Image (tube, rainbow, N blue to C red; front, side, top):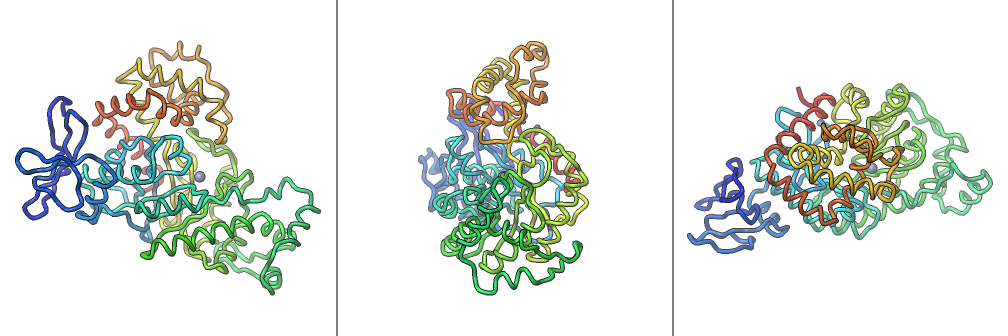
Length: 470
Ligand SMILES: [Zn+2]
């Protein structure tokens, strides 16, 4: 497709009675063309009675009203869930291309409050971009929309209004770091908590028989620690769940994520949480524990694989006994050493979320096609790395600019150099909100087909390693 004249995306063309609707690339950017106006769309009238509708959230909602397969769904049971986070709003066509011959439920709109702040986007635009991408590709097999890492009731409410149907509650600000406390302080806090009558009796004097895991019992210490650590988090989650139940009467998926905790989530902590959200009537559909080992952005996982497998299996066994709900792996980009452990499980038991890989794949295209511009991004990433890494678990040191000289004949190689890769991974917000952001989107738009194919290949590699695609 050329940039100086109008061209239609052939897979997008749909007919509604006498009206044809299609995605068209114009010199002013992509637009929807409607051969005659339809209710709900807003745009400019064209010469032959048609309408040119810009890619706004309002027009995305109208599109989904007329083409109901573009309305986000809940996750079906029996298949794996996979989150395709897209920080640029340009990646959905490539994500859809990667789905070919894959068996999974794709979450095509997935973004966290933190990502929204860093990219300057909102839930409405994130969902709109996924809807337009799916429409462009003629994709009709259904997808999810996950408002990720929600730390406030307001953000959950906003995402619900926009049409999201999966809500990932992040109660980390309400988790008490008992691991860093003296036993006396934990005991004091435990005394101060209000607990239901019979609660200790029910939890302390029972055998919890979990298929595949055996019998679990709480010691008093395990119960006290779990209770102090999670009481506030549970009440926050119950509050968010209750609000969403009022706001989304048709039902929704609700994930609890504690993956950014400092310490791995033990099977006893998970059992405690499962018992409590059952008591509190919080309908969990997935749980993201903190796994053992080092889970860093942009790099493969590091640690003891046998320990990871044993935690994963224990979490899945508890989730099956108390749900069933899924076990969710966050920061799932590039974790190739872990994927075989998921591939050996029933796919209906798990969900994997990615985001950074789609951004980095876009940078790979720019490294090949726009080397001078890519160098500017590298410069900004080096400048912003220490500041931007603070919200993440990152061990890399500041990348050495001198290293670039050695890599200058193969700029793409910079993306596979661990510290540069992490620097590029965590500085996306600074890049996108700087004057470079608009150019990045524009230039990637010029290499749209190459970006689509690169994503198809890279995400396809992820799906294949997870056993979801042949
Ligand atoms: Zn997470």
